Image (tube, rainbow, N blue to C red; front, side, top):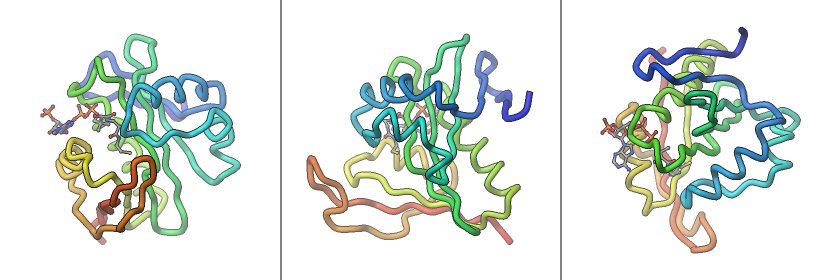
Length: 158
Ligand SMILES: CC(C)(COP(=O)(O)OP(=O)(O)OC[C@H]1O[C@@H](n2cnc3c(N)ncnc32)[C@H](O)[C@@H]1OP(=O)(O)O)[C@@H](O)C(=O)NCCC(=O)NCCS
């Protein structure tokens, strides 16, 4: 089926495009992930209208994580990524990011970037493992609580 992928290293995993019908589940998941951005259900339901796209990861038919990104010209930004706490460290987020990177690359993206809270060491280690590197810091970028943002970027070789 178009938009689906199978991640070789996680046998029970199925990846597919995030549809409007996944919006409530995406909100439920992000509420369980303190570090994830808190988007409204409407924001997920209207992703495409906002020029964004998303993927969900399902394990045994249950949605366990999602990724949302925006592409503009030859750049893409990962806007939100979350995997429910019970199934972390099993490769779900890796599969989501790799699927997004594969599609970005196929559509001519050269650079992928994202922002994380400076305290979110787990996410930074995760992204570093996928080849992202620190690309600057924005003082006071986040609110509630106020905190610096660390920008990370991955350049595809030309
Ligand atoms: C960051 C997050 C998406 C990772 O999801 P995940 O499915 O557990 O990630 P993976 O299993 O694919 O991890 C792959 C590798 O990344 C690294 N990694 C992942 N989480 C890590 C952590 N908390 N600390 C250190 N390294 C970590 C490890 O090297 C891991 O491999 P290993 O398990 O063999 O050691 C998840 O912890 C999460 O949802 N966090 C809350 C939301 C968030 O921080 N989102 C990112 C900002 S948008």
